[in-house]
Image (tube, rainbow, N blue to C red; front, side):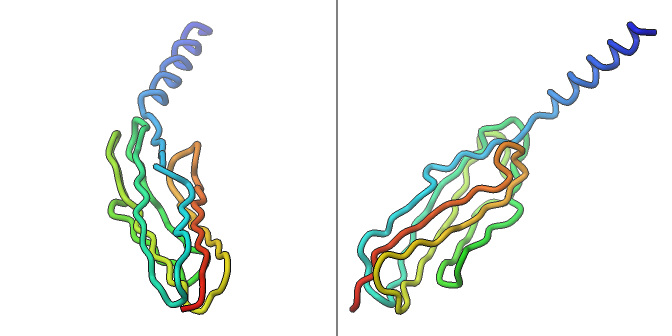
Length: 125
């Protein structure tokens, strides 16, 4: 009986290892737009990759402010597949150093929530 329990435990442990896990890796976690003018819209692309061994799912992307827009080109990535996150920032009437965050929610058990930061030094027109 003990042998059967040990074998069953080993089998269940082996199966969970076969299922794999997604693992998201970003090209960078911060981007500085540098000096920009008021009412200027700037854009950058931040790439990411699924370096795990299961499908990666981007569940949600949230920007900390309406001045920041985001667009993900792929919400599901197979192992080894790459994607891009487009980030737009509208400097509006801000003045001085501005920092905003973008939160990405995934099914990666090691990184279920990732925060990216963008910066800009906004100057008058």
